[in-house]
Length: 429
Image 1 (cartoon, rainbow, N blue to C red):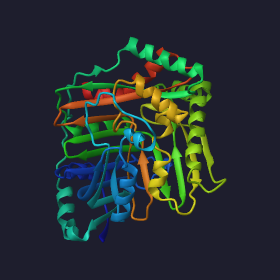
Image 2: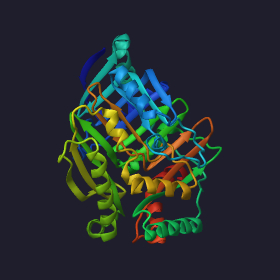
Image 3: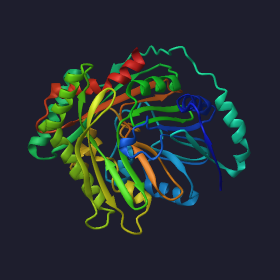
Image 4: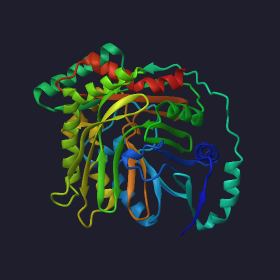
């Protein structure tokens, strides 16, 4: 059982910063921040979960079955992540590429302390065994001193795939598309640094400050960290209503207002970007239909352009109503990995990109989120993210793009650099 408290916070921006700093004393931390993007159906402005009382960690084998058993047993809030390589639990697939990060493939925990922020209202849910700690915690959070000195990293980034090799691999993908093996594939490349130390909180704050996305995440599990400026929702469930919001189509921003409007219009009218998006919408519709009431799958928004601090993005919203008897984990199992990070047809695309990519994706293009005690959930897509293993002193970020029959290798490469800009800026100054 959980004790509930509700308080009003005067300076919510400062409180959020102090709350994240305060959370670092714990070994299990998940911080989710919508950065006030109300237009994307966010349930809370920010969420913090800390201090595991129970947890589950596993590789891909029977991962969804184990997660379902854990979620049913706890019957409580649980927070965690699904790595991309859980695909191997769902289909006859493998992940044999190099893994410099070595994160567990699935990790969820039941937190002792949960903080939910909406507007200026803070709601906390503490397990009864720690309920008497709330006043002390609130005092400690409010008394935190914020660091005004700008933190600087000095990280030397290396490319896992160099430009010429990237072109060759994209051309191989185009050959697969022209042969009819697939019609779209999301091809990713890693940028990395070895023997490197960073300050995870300060690096996250800097990354979030540049992008201010709707699905930002700071995750800490012992010595492993995710610092994410994700703009994309994978999937959300509320009652029997499910939505997925794939992103396909990206354009840079301009500081010139007139030029920026023109860039947005160009993205909206771009035939290649629209076709990428529509292909994935069809895939998501098919995935959602596996658990949906007949006839309930709807495309609520098709190829709508949303503007973020660094880029314009083309987002579609697909929804469904669940059939009776469908468990929350069933919805994840039948839709994972998200189509925007694989391609279509999904299984063929995953096989081909596994052969061409040089790095095991791990948490990159997986998902972070939570289940409520009622079985609702909300998960993002792990893109625009820095991953860090402090013990191994290994820092990594990956970027990808959708390759279709109309793709030009140079344009795809340049789009990757646009997507990588914020991470590189934060790490290399």
